Length: 405
Ligand SMILES: *Cc1c(COP(=O)(O)O)cnc(C)c1O
Image 1 (cartoon, rainbow, N blue to C red):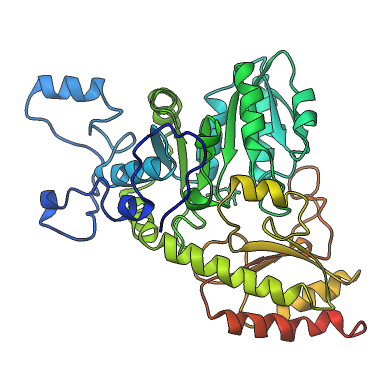
Image 2: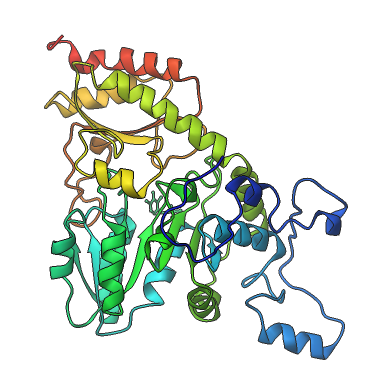
């Protein structure tokens, strides 16, 4: 798969994603020519001499000392993810939330202020509203479509701007090039959650963003069997976070989970392609269905961020939301429960197609209440036969549409 490149990259002479995924950082001769990478399930590493030991402990960012810092299986993944995101380096974490917490806490101190995009991931919001105030850090939330509103929210003590483009329920888009440029001028660090796009569909570092975080629990690992995360940035930024917060908070995944991610990454290109193409087929069916009021998808013409999405993303993905034409939350519940193939579950990015209705969230979700319309359902198109998925939606929509048809 050949990807168009956007803007200047930190890492000229990049490898193609296919090559990164297949061979980068895989020293097969060192492990019997094995095609699949090894799981080095060890907590610690032995040295022949005291001098070697001293040097390794002094250079733990790249040396093998103890698996809370660096482990050979995790390191293969680390090198691949850094290359895929056009980053100087990266850290693999035990969850997306660990990556988010590291990126944010490593760059804020008591007295600092952050600006965060409205409708970001719920636990990101919790970090800013519930945890950081206890450390003397404040935050304001702004509508990310409006770069001017974001600019106005910047205070003299603002040190960090947190973006998520697109957000994962309403798919709000932020102009990353514009935000990065205005933040740079004022010495403010920018962080973006890139879980929706994966590095195949968007590379925020190329647009001037300082740190990219991912929930690898979604598309990157891709099989609904791992919780993990990724943090990417310049080598200097990543080394600083490694030597302090990463080693202290202890958020590295196990070698086995890193191996599952490596296995998932091998098929990322085909999985993302299939999921995206199925989502587009389902959207084409749903948008003309009388029981569907509106589609919310960044690559749909009706989306307010559509043209901006096309400028900074290579494609949409397999996740979108629909507003059903009903004011009866029980009809939405019946629709979800009548689906035979789509599972009712949080998360996305695996083999299985999923639905997550707003009525499935408790009213208290995300601190201030989720604020989503109760006739909204988030749909993830998985890897199954799209004709089967379409037929399933069609039969379940009978719960909504009868009186309108
Ligand atoms: C799932 C998710 C997270 C959190 O990641 P975990 O791996 O579950 O900790 C963060 N951001 C987005 C957009 C997500 O979808």
